[in-house]
Image (cartoon, rainbow over the protein chains, first blue to last red):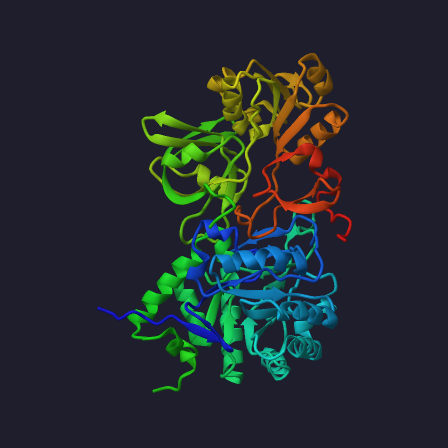
Amino acid sequence: MTLPVDMSTTLGNAWFPAPLFTASGCASSGKELAQFFPLNQIGAVVTKSVMSKPRHGRPTPRMAETPSGMLNSIGLQGPGIDSFLANDVPWLLEQKARVIVSIAGETVEEYSTLARKLRSVSGISAVEVNISCPNVENRGLVFACDPDASRRVIDGVRKTIGGDLPIIAKLSPDVTDLPSIARGVVDAGADGLALINTVLGMVINIDSMRPHLGGKTGGLSGPAIKPVAVRAIYQVHAALPKVPILGMGGVASGRDALELILAGASGVSIGTASFGNPSAIIEIQNELRDLLAARGFATMQQAIGYAHREEA
Amino acid sequence: MATINKNAIQQVVTLVSNKRIGAYHQILLNVGDVVKSCRPGNFVAIRVGGDSSKMILRRAFAISRVADNSQYGGTMELIVAPHGSGSKWLCSQQEGAEIDIIAPLGTAFGIPTEPINALLIGGGYGSAPLFGLADVLKNRGCKVDMLLGASVGSKIYAPMEGKRSVNSLKIYTEDGSMGETGRVTENLLDIVRDRNVDVIYSCGPMAMLSAITALVAETEVIHQCAVEESMACGVGICMTCVLPVQNEDGTTLMLRSCIDGPVMDGSNVRWDLVGKVPEALA
């Protein structure tokens, strides 16, 4: 007989009873998944990155399935922060779900404006600052590919939002030196890191003989990128062992989630797997609990970064 | 508590039969009580490829019809064209295979409370859900005429029993191999006028839906169409299947064809903007 595993986790000063989360952009604002499981049974709903104004996003086609993965090119379609705070957050809190609000901006100032609006909202567990969406018109605007721009965004959000609300910076794996970008945003005030955003990719349609996606490039997600996520989390945890990481990237099973935790993730977000199976998060959480128990872990937190331990 | 897709259930069901009909496969699934909440126009999202597949996304198929009284309990019929790797996998499944489905999903065709004159227009396998719809409309006392079109005769789906649920059926093929030569839109306005059509229900390629909308734009005819946009999830979370749709206040929004569709009012869809981005929002 195995004892129940304590599955709770923390990201900065925020506590969560379970370590599985939605991934921003893969659960909308939670309403759609509520038909398939009670939203309060997972760690938190990480909402789709919201901008200051309503936004159409990119033209269709927005999707291409690839071997064990997919490209998406949504381009941050959304209702804008005011509608989001008026409609989506209250609904999630009514469901007793914990909420991590993800924000995205085109300028350093837009992030600060968004942070100012969040400051007065009660009931939010943390804010994810998405500085790594690949689907923007100008690749120069992917803040997370530029150490200085990354720091300025996080610094602006930290100063605006004040002391308590944990800030999680979502980073891109498409950089040469991820630990240095991570160190920069932590120095600027990030309490945690979300790793990884999608990997920039492209599919060419061999009938039209042009890029298939309306936005030409898209973000690659799904099991195809899981080794990239494990590597990124392992590298950053080695460099910054005290900084909590919300891990994501191709997780589709409890085994995958455990791999990310062993690499150094304090929590695991499920994105693309929910597209194929809307109950995936709950199933993965249950599988993870069994896998931890079978390996003798009394708490999930004991497994965080366990792959880094010294050779016996 | 869920507010979207309230009747949708994810379940593993058994394939009862798989028959080839012309260019298509007629697939019957034993789905149980969920048939009670399936309406014409709804769709089903099916996991394809088996557990070790490199295909990670479900495939969406229109529910052709459901039955509640067969020897198997509730059954769901799909008409599938084996085009891509996902639909080919489904068409290769044998009797007894276990299939992971989510249904019913999306909006349904609006059913009038009064007996009206309905014209059902199907392109290719798009005709599949129209026969189930025809049954419902006939039971409401509606007059139901049907136009079916395809490039070639083998791509016309018109089962014998389906023909009984319509008052008239006219077939068009582009190569003339079945019915009249041409497209379903050929004499559409004459047909609408001669038969006093109140509502057009359509399902088929986007170009056909767009052409029908343009033809009836100046008439009083209501055009309900089931759209087809590629989807990653089918349940509203991925935002890939959007179409530009005009609101009552005149603004255009990118709406998800999986939860705000597949059945939409053709006159609200900004067909000119499909594949483009509407004017910026205020």
